[in-house]
Length: 325
Ligand code: GLV
Image (cartoon, rainbow, N blue to C red; front, side):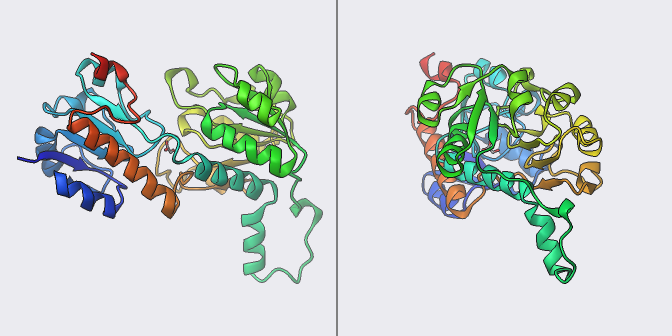
């Protein structure tokens, strides 16, 4: 009898087909699951779940008596209650590494697009306005040789630092839970306290994971500490930023502009007041979403779930206690 897997959102079709050779796979493609009879039924029987952004909390786990592993197709795992899963001996896995360069490309692209006002000027041309000469207030700001402050210098942050240092001659400041000597040596990154970073950076790029400690870590007083010419980039999680304070900072000229890939509520509502501002450039949480990277993440996630369900240690296991215990 094959073990049962739920494939949730954004698992590559080719990878789902491969999983079907070894497992009995039921696919769900939408955000809504609680109260869905088919999902509840699959959950009762599931040995494993693979997918993106499913909220795995106590309530869900109570309906999943056989569950052994949840394989996230993402590096962030703020959707998983790791403590509760560990208590229940359920393995949690994610997809670090394979998305570092792809995500760094996207976040650096967002930074350039915001600084050089690329979406706004794209509309300017497409709307037939090129015959009107650009006003100085429509010009962007330089990126090269500026100071980039990276909050959260893990492997994605380091890939951003690499681009900034070698490609753009930028000066790198960083703030992190622990010192990153490799980035200090390779990209001449300088460690700072958060406030010192905020005060001295032309670009502030937030890349920390979402935890209880990082909730709203960038709020009114942090925006006030930034330069009025600063550009703020959120490539982490929406809950790390106080969105109302970001709105005020952009409207009051506390900062110059922002590039935002992530929101408190996703998908964000089109009535979100941030979306009405001209000095924000935004994306629908696509840091790692390229054709190549989505496939590589799905493959790693599949390897994780397969190993976990065949008695082997998954390559990128989060709660190692479950394996060791
Ligand atoms: C994307 O945000 C991820 O966590 O992989």
